[in-house]
Image (cartoon, rainbow, N blue to C red; front, side, top):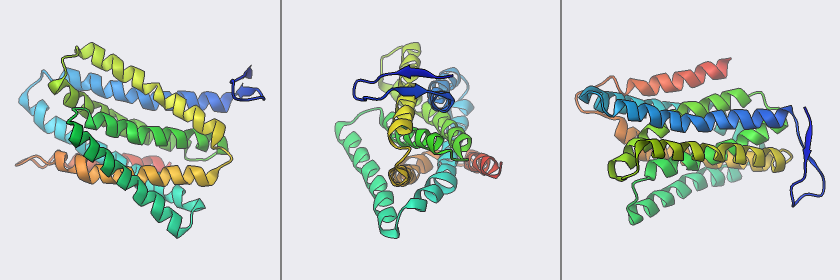
Length: 251
């Protein structure tokens, strides 16, 4: 399937081929995991106290495990392939420092959307990397997409709970907002496919930057929230989340 379209900034036509369709589908599915997580949060918000405590902390731990698997199995191993030690250090630490600054800014303006911002902050660079990986013919495309889904589900769940505490927006409108945000995935994916395919160093830099930011978020926000006094099962969610990443990597 080939359809030619002409972006205003290009003199040559861009072909929408099967690879580009793959980018759109995978990045959209990864993005739709956010409103799906929010929908699950809406359902469980009216359930018992157990669902409001143990399940919530278990989902948070699961998300942390999935994020760590993305860092350990995909982002860092592939990110260091095209970088020197010094540049890899700069990009990785730069990502962590950027997320630190975002945390400080959110604290200063006292917003109730820190989880939402964190979710989008790692989703966008990963979608960029996904688009570029498809263009380069990487064999880790599906795994990266699966890991994005696994982390966006709990992040959507947590972001919904966080915003719902203070926002007067109706639940269905909030979930619809998450659906609109999921469209950022295809936009970033197409951008990576079009402009980063012949720039492996740029792709690896994005991966390392995202890895540093994700690792900061895990230990700053996710891991502390996953702990629940006198309950030990929720933390096991991190094991399950990471194990799913290992299974995908082995496949």
